[in-house]
Image 1: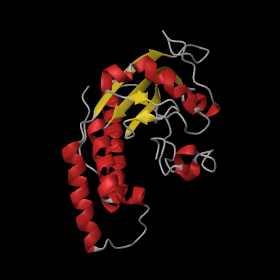
Image 2 (image 1 turned 45 degrees about the vertical axis):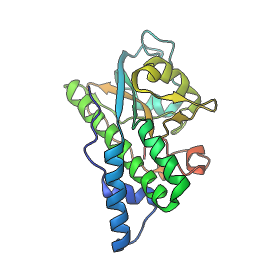
Image 3 (image 1 turned 45 degrees about the horizontal axis):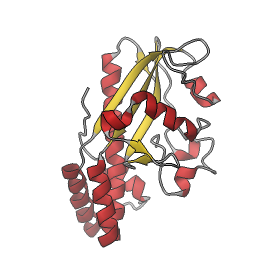
Image 4 (image 1 turned 180 degrees about the vertical axis):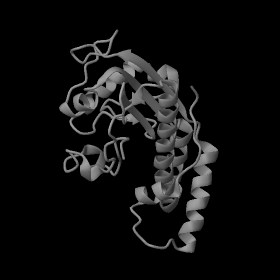
Length: 223
């Protein structure tokens, strides 16, 4: 299954920029168009995923992976199978952002927002492809380490199971942050009946007030 970046939704780029204006000034419109085009022309998205049976104790079959937290347990309560997924825009995007931060911070901010919107598009497309592949089962929302009460500490085990470094060139720093930064990992479930979709706003997350991602101006992949 190949990664698909089908576009950068303008409203998503604006949301990451925190733009609340009713009209976009012409100069911002031009900068947005230019930066979004630069992201589209630079990134090389890649994805990987694996399917598992869910054992009665919540362990993913064939692994010792048993995610902690009540939020994910609630998401998977009607599921007998689960998926692990990872997606990245590639080091090309990381290089672009770093270079621009050194030369033009205004552009760097817009590029960063556009790249965040781009990786969400890649993840959304992957989820659509997975939902189609596994019909008639129903796919849940994706749930990333660090979101709700799912600890960020499980990131390393999840990445190890997916072999993300070899598969898509994704690695973790000593502190557990992903490199390239414009990357997402997540858990999803497969159920025999439709699953309700959760709100994807940070404000609806149980740890929004203490979230380490928000403190750094980032997100966990769920917003």
